[in-house]
Image 1: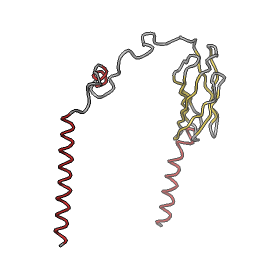
Image 2: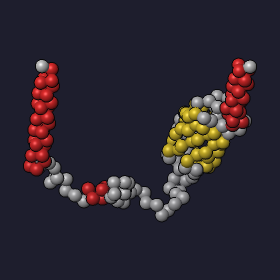
Image 3: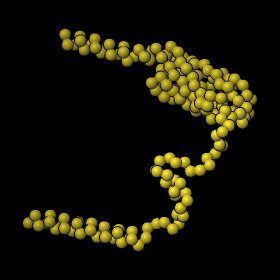
Length: 178
């Protein structure tokens, strides 16, 4: 009776685990970042609903076909838009292990930025953690900083203490064996 119960539970578990994969394989979606790239721009492609671990994305707008990898029905990869391509809409065909997904990208004219207020390059150090240390060290003269006499003395004292501890530990062990 226990074997039958175990078999039924295993079958229910297998159906529950495989059902979302089968439903996701019915249809997929494609997303492109940035959504409207310029010629020569790098793209990130994401596809959902593919049961395989790899896929290939092809388009006349790409320099080369993109290899998409991932797991769990979600794959991602990168490619570049041809620098010689003109603005317009281009088909993207993604071939998965079990089906094909079709999408479309719109290439905009070079220099057709969507956010004109964003600067083209960083204008100051980025405050990325460290409590603003990037700003602090960018204004510091690093040639004058470094270990000095105080650091050397501290290191010698610590090395001496370690040597004394090793000698004392060794002498205690040799007394205990006699």
